[in-house]
Image (cartoon, rainbow, N blue to C red; front, top):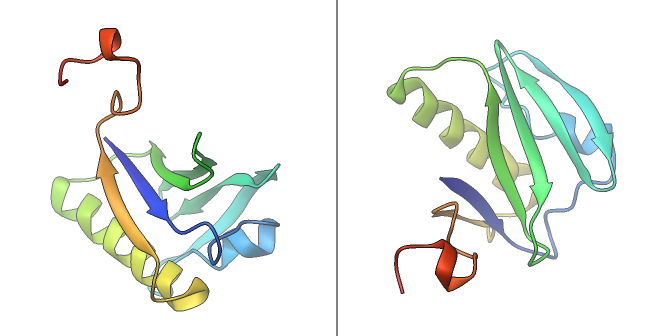
Length: 110
């Protein structure tokens, strides 16, 4: 599963400071890496990546750590709320299957 941020105008990562803006207020964390518009943040004992997709949107990736399903959903909701607070309420989040944008012979759904 991939979580895609659908907004090419409001949500842009240009620095470690922009990554810091994503960390939910209720959690401790820090920006870890930044390069070419992408980066990683640490939120408590987890690592989250923000990467540019083929279509110039961003995707969020849970990279390291272990969370229960309930905790995972709570963290995502807190991240979504913080992104909307910092970058604009019109930003939408969409989940997609990993193979959604692959060539037809690489995926199962037509």
